[in-house]
Image 1 (cartoon, rainbow over the protein chains, first blue to last red):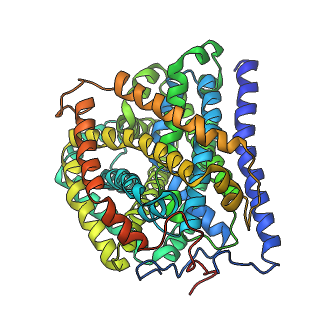
Image 2: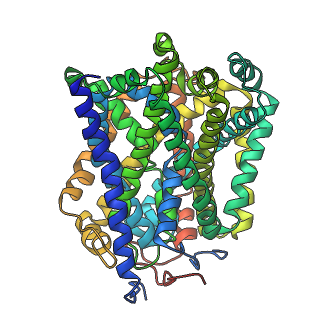
Length: 44
Length: 498
């Protein structure tokens, strides 16, 4: 594999997989903090 | 379970469960059998750049609209469009539902194919490299394909009958299983001798290719078809979000999660192709979705050590991906009928019976299957456009500030989103529609052509005339006499199971 292909692979896989893992971890961490506070329903 | 007209009495049990179910909706056969082919035949690395760009300029902005609509309106596509953008747009919601349902009719056939090949892989029926081609020749378009379509529908009905909790439970098993299987398959593929040629083929960029409009149009199409954005499926699952649930961060998680699976599938397929039969790569990549999956992949697996096991994993993964997407499509149509006044089980049986009747021609004749894939696949671009129009009618700034960045928001969305939905997405939809109808069709006005513009126009016209004629009835049945463009429904108070 050429250096350009390796760099492209790292950038693409890093942004897509890294982005997914980071976003998922953030979502679950936010959820953990939300479960400690009562929710107000906007429709009620 | 929601059993009565217009009331939402059940929500997803947790955010994790909701994300898993929505990922299950998004990850389908398109990720596994279309993405690797399209990436390979459109410049590899340069296609991937365009593909990531359109994740941010089509899929995720539309997913945010869908999450916002479903959570705010607490109704299926028809009711949500009517409630949020006016009674005159019930037909647009109907179009979104019709497109997704039209796809569901033949997608049950695809799911049945996956089940059949999983069975064959489990029983050693694909052990010889010629078995797969022989099986496809005798199976596709036969009564056996119809029987497998019935089996696939029965499996999906068994899940949807239990409402959102049934969907959540099923996808909690199926999606982690799918992810593990695809990771195992990709890991095996990259460790095959010669696999690095597949990686080089996938990731070597040809920057000059980025000057070709076709690369960008293919990347946009792949995002429009395999992320589920603009299909109405996310809207349907968002009906069951808890009141405190976020909109925008969930859209980003699902978008990136879906494309992560596509990337894994691309690595798995191309590394296997280049390791086992690099000389036939153009033939394999050009064999079409069914050719690649049901003819070539078993042949390639038959050549590698332990291939029988990996073949089972491949078709099990494909079956999981297909079934979870079929479940979402079935729920979409069922939800619309529930909003129109039917009780869930009756609505579901009606949808399943319709899927059986209208899907049977696709099971029995490949030309019908290909025609329906063409007509309603292109129709999805119009669905995406309708979502942008509906959001515009509601008020993009109002949607952003009052719904997306409202209570429960974990990721505040800036004004860039209003620009993308108000200008970029409609432009993309018009350009993409023009390209597909002008450059990708075969035989302009022949109404009986499999891939003609004529067949699209005839079937779309019939659908649009029917939906416009029924517009007032659809609006009245799905939202009652309440004024449209109102605030969130008062019956969306459920924060847990009823």
